[in-house]
Length: 235
Image (cartoon, rainbow, N blue to C red; front, side):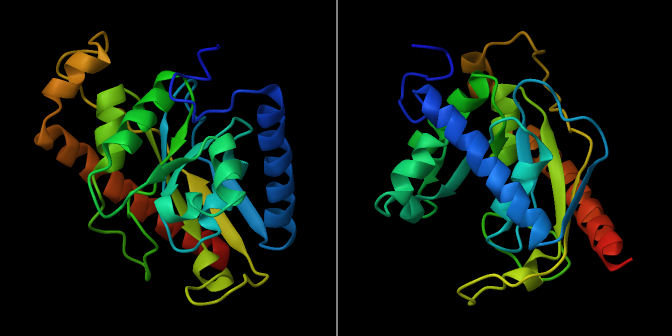
């Protein structure tokens, strides 16, 4: 068993599953560019190794668009109900998806998220928790910041514009349109114990103050990037 497979079995275990992700990503990027008019930019290089990718969330297609930011495999945290759909659920798990029960403290999802980051892979977490509406980024959930501190990995904030019009809530299918995605510079957690601390020790010392401070920085960056993406979309 390779390190990438992990002990919990939710990561791909066969080569075809890795190839499947690459094929799916290729198709998704083609659709994103051709139908959703996707343009994207990186303000800085994405970090090597593990990081938390934290996009704003205005539409169901946000999940598809962020896959274009890197050729590396991205693991996603998603609603538990989606993973219960026959075939689709198994497919999402094969691609590295982690089901999350949003109505309770989901320790299993937390454990699997830390394991993903421990293997060196990026993890996508939408810090707004669900689709939001309007131009303001506020009241973020603290999960992304907590995971970054616990695993000692950076957070990459991502602004997305245009998707709310492409696939608004209540519509069954998306419309053609234009979208813009911007990934900002990574935010690094400030760890009093230093980078050499073990994950287990850091788990006990993660303070609400540290999480709150990192979350505030993330919120400010997400607002900046959202505004910038919106401006470039309209220009």
